[in-house]
Length: 224
Image (tube, rainbow, N blue to C red; front, side, top):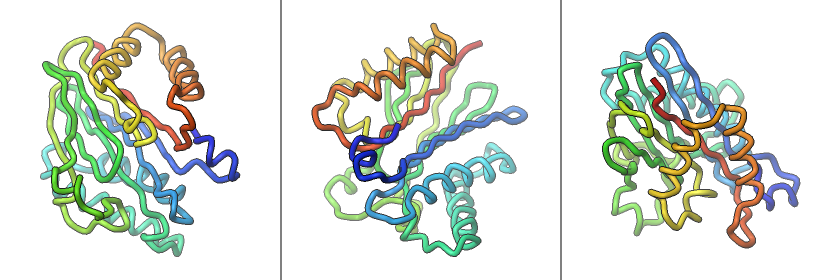
């Protein structure tokens, strides 16, 4: 959902969301282009494309560092084809990669959040050192694996799920666990169409006063 500020300034939505299924695997990505960069809307869109194009040819057991490296290199290749400098298209990159057995691998580079409800509630944590640094973690700037956060979880029961979101949402949450549980429960009880309609309504009527950021969210839930 494009933010009010970008609407007023007639800017493009700098967020991108993607989800795909193939064979025994699936993936979902939420990417947020850095607002100060002129082509960040392209960067976020190509980041989502890169996640899918790389993962669909990867073995699910590939080391997490290699997964991130392959996606980054593919993103750089797509930008080069368009003669775009990486720093002009910098973007966060959050994604989940899962299989039919319920195993899920969670990756996060940059702002935003990934919350999950499995046998317990949790999130893909940003490293504590990053909270007190001025370093920008994003495709286009980050050059090392340590800038990524990573976690593996299992989704095996109803009401298990994952929510990926840009910082336009995550920074306004007062109770992350309640938000995650309520949204996953609503997802399991409603059709995709009704769920989309509900989320669009909530994002349009976002309760934080004078909110301005773009807002994007992706949901995965176990339904078997």
